[in-house]
Image (cartoon, rainbow, N blue to C red; front, side):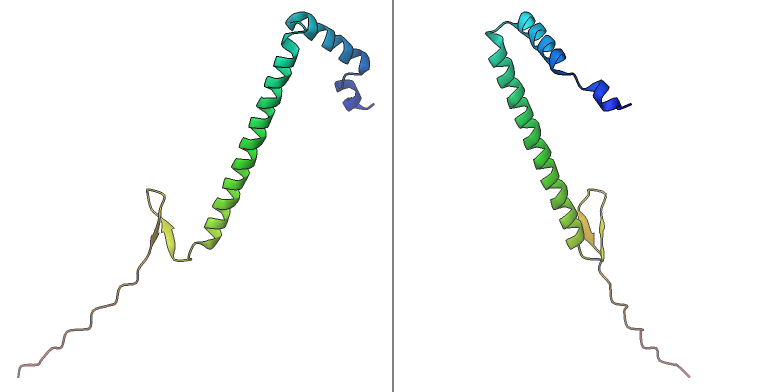
Length: 95
């Protein structure tokens, strides 16, 4: 048995749902509700695309980081520097 068919309303159910919505909100409010729904879906799509772009940019930034950097406690990369060892001091022997 196909469970997807049990979840999706058929044409009769859609007509019944539309009639209930029409009675609840009235014919004058339907275009306003549809416009609000469309704007909400558009805002959601834009936010999803922006989040995807930021995620890709962060991934590219991580790939481009030099290998000898570590993030600091503030989240900014801190580059490690190799310090030169001081030359050994010359000693003179006293006899």
